[in-house]
Amino acid sequence: MIPKRLGLCARVLSRPRSSLLSRTFATQPEKPSTATETTHFGFRDVPRSEKESLVKEVFSSVASKYDVMNDAMSMGVHRLWKDEFVSSLKPGSVKVGKVTRCIDVAGGTGDIALRILDYAREKKADRDITVDLVDINPDMLKEGQKRFRKTMYHGSPQVAFHVGNAQDLGKDRFPDNTYDIYTIAFGIRNCTDIPAVLSEAYRVLKPGGVFACLEFSKVTQPVLASLYEQYSFSVIPLLGTILAGDRASYQYLVESIRKFPSQQEFARMIANAGFEVGELEDGGAWRDQWGGIASIHTGVKLA
Image 1: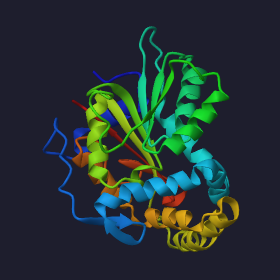
Image 2 (image 1 turned 90 degrees about the vertical axis):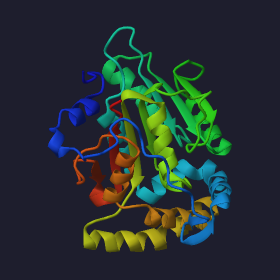
Image 3 (image 1 turned 180 degrees about the horizontal axis):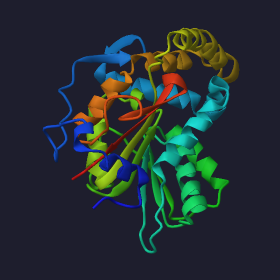
Image 4 (image 1 turned 180 degrees about the vertical axis):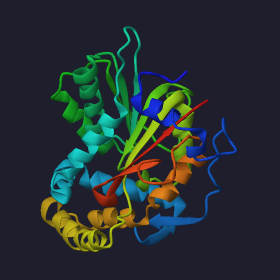
C-alpha cells in the first residue's frame, strides 16, 4: 500500500511501471564499486585515502562563515532551493501517534533540519517528527548546534546531532530500516565514495522511505552555462577571499561542482543503489532548479 504520509513517495509509486527506470535488482542495492587508488579533489588527483581529510580541512576553515558565504555566492537563492527541496518532501505525519523519522546527512549548519521541523509544525501540526542531523565535521556541526540554540527545538527530542561519516553511518547508531526520509543537501559531491553513501542511505531507510538529494548540477542552457562558468571561477573565489579570508577553499568548492556527475548520470547511480526513480529526464528522476545550477534528486526504497 502506498504510504499516504509522503506525497512524493505516492507520486513516484503511482507512475506506470513502464515509465520507471527498469532495474534487475528490485530488492537489493548494488554494492559500491571497488575503489581506485586516486580520486579527484576539485581538479586535482589525490590518493583516495587523503580526500576525506582534505575535505575536512576545507569545511573546518569555512564553517564559521559558511552561511554568510552561501548567501553571498548565490545572492540568497540557495534559500529558495532549500525551501523547495523540503516542501517537495512534505515531511510530517497527520496520524496521531505516528512519528516521522528523518535523517539529514552532511547536515552541517542545520538549515535543512530546521526547515523540516518548521514545515512539519506549520503545515502538518506535527510536533513529534524527529531529525537526526549527521555531519563528519565537528566544526560544521557546532554551527548547527548554535543555530538550534536560538529555536524552540533546542533541548527537545525532535533533533539530535551526530558526528558521522555518510559512507559508513554504522549499524549500531543507525540501524537498518529506521528512517522515513533521508536528506542530503550540497554534501554528497564532497564524499570520496558516492555509491557507498547511496548504499548507506538505502540501508537506513524503511521500505517506502524517500531518499532526497539537493546538489549543484550541470547547466543545460548554453548562454546561462557560460555566464555561470565565468561567475563561478571569477567571483566566488574572490568572495571567499574578501568575506572568509580563504580563496583556496572556495576555489575547491567551485571545482568540486564541475566534477560532480550530470543529472542523468547521478540518477542512474541512485537507481543502481536500489532506489526506484522516475524517467531519466528533468521532472522524472530529478527536477532542475534555475536551469540546472542545482537539482533535486529523489528515489524510493520499495522493499
